[in-house]
Image (cartoon, rainbow, N blue to C red; front, side, top):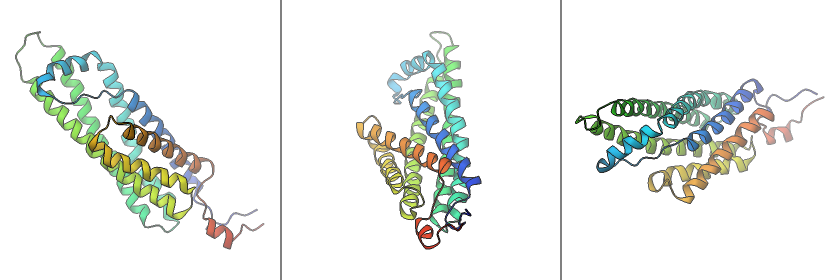
Length: 237
């Protein structure tokens, strides 16, 4: 049996893309489990620094997870572009750009995390009653980290919505994956700024990660298929 090229995607690209998506989804779960949420408040900055120092190992693990994940997200963009480009969907260009841009933004976020780790270590090495500028600088870094995270949530949501619409509209993958992606992306965009501790945001995260896993699994195991093309041009024997 000879497969119709118009009906089947480039499996050499789809398999790595699917594997990337699956790895990224597991790294997102790992980053959530190791995340330390500290709301910047200058009145409590000394307590925050002590808390971060007590959990410095967890902070380092989270930073390394995001470093790896950021690089993988950047590579996922071109993989998505090549995967969907041969289907003739212009939306794939936008989705690929936004996905890679999200990865770049998370690189800046990761750099800020490493700067905070260094700052916390320096603060812990100071005399107990040392009067210095480090708390003020650490507070500024925590503010910067929070702002980058909020922007990253927004960009993650936008890129996920665009990718989800691409999946849902083309039908090359099960449409429910696309609608799940759109739902998770909208929650990231809206509740990332409103309340990241709400049940709605947590549910959106679950939907986002699950849709990413399904997206990767279908690309890895089955690939994209043009149902209309399969009907009009069935595989020849």
